Length: 125
Image 1 (cartoon, rainbow, N blue to C red):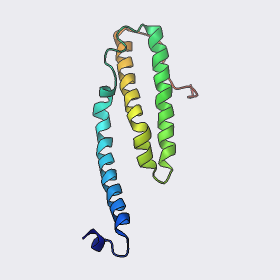
Image 2 (image 1 turned 90 degrees about the horizontal axis):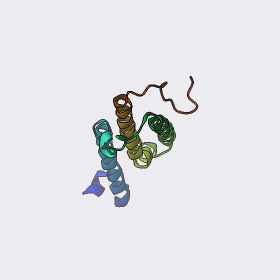
Image 3 (image 1 turned 90 degrees about the vertical axis):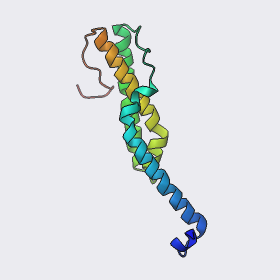
Image 4 (image 1 turned 30 degrees about the horizontal axis):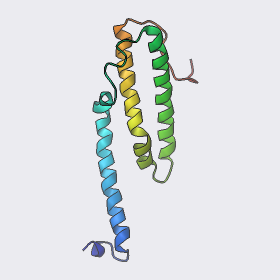
């Protein structure tokens, strides 16, 4: 039956094409979930005992890692299977870093810390 849908192509190639289509649709659905699950990848109590100097260092490290992961995902997008590679290799860690950043920012506000905004290294001032 599948062979008749793809005349002239062997069955394994048609099955591989169908599998890639299903994988692409599945990953597209996962992309929409990233906003709602970012805090699920982070420990909500991680920054409860941090003081302001510790939060400065942590927020800077998180901003640098997020920028690095964004660059890696953008670079992966240029490849043949770029979107799939970017999703599989970097998306989960990027979501976890965003969740940790949100929690660190909440601890920053809760502790009433004051400092200049944290920017990734190499960002224009």
